[in-house]
Amino acid sequence: MASTDDELVPTVDLAPLESDDPSERARVASAVAAACETSGFLQVVGHGIPESTIAAMRAASDEFFALPLDRKLLVRPAHPGINRGYAARGTEALSYSLGIEAPSPDLFEAFNIGLDPVPDDEFYRKDPHDFFAPNVWPADVPSLRPALLDYFDSAVRVALGLTDVFALALGLTEGWFRPYVERSTLTLRVNHYERRHDDDAPRSGQMRMGAHSDYGIVTVLYSDPVPGLEILGPDGAWHGVIPRTGALLVNLGDLTARWTNDRWRSTLHRVVPPPESQPGPAKRRSVALFFDGNYDAVVSCLPTCMGPDRPARYPPVLAGEHLFAKVMGPRSFEPTRGLETAGERLRAARS
Image (cartoon, rainbow, N blue to C red; front, side):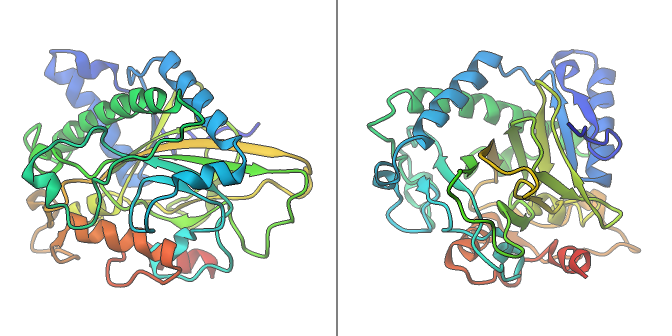
């Protein structure tokens, strides 16, 4: 099995963040900053999520995706703009989020959840885009709700802690991002990729998940340690990423790239089909916690990332409007326009 290039996707131990020693926290921030400025991807250990929590999440998710399609379709969302419930294979093509048409829909299915329960106050009731729609749970798999919510809470804790590290690394006060994320439009997406024995071969250019950059602030990703995930490196080439045992992958989203004036990278990534030279069933799982900011947060260039010789590249944007436009492009098969931070890199890689 190929290993991940440690220089491209370095491993950072988060355990020292529990120390009262400021120098320890600064050391972690420095390591995170180095990764964010080069590839925009890292893998973290010492994250504190118990293996039992991850194992329960995997087992319950496997049970759900093993259901017949008609049973999974019972927990579809009411409309494509609601990021909850089941998304069947072939209903999305993520490269549309870059403003680029895909040759064919992506070859994955997914199950999405958010806050549970949603707090009963005015902010959540005024949500303009159904970001806080109630979760929909399958009656067939009663273990799914407790298993996913336990993992969800743990991954949110990791993501929130990372925003404090980001603040230190960017020369801001620790906790600077908290007002922008205290009511984040959180989504946990469980992705399931499976080539069955009777599946047709992928069409030309068809991906398990098309090339895209993530949309928000930071993504915390559990991934099976198998090939498939690839990131576009600073050299313009695609590189395979296989996480170490016990590690979680972390990558930045477009809002962080806009905040930092592209000082930090919102890196293009994709999931490629298994090679035709290795026929037969092939399965891969990943679980992404998208930490995307309050829907009314205004994201504009950070003062520490601009100057006379580096003017702001992007106008201010509302986090919620940005997220909704990005989500709807892949689901409507219409290119997202006007919010690009990474599409030109994909065009260059294709050429």
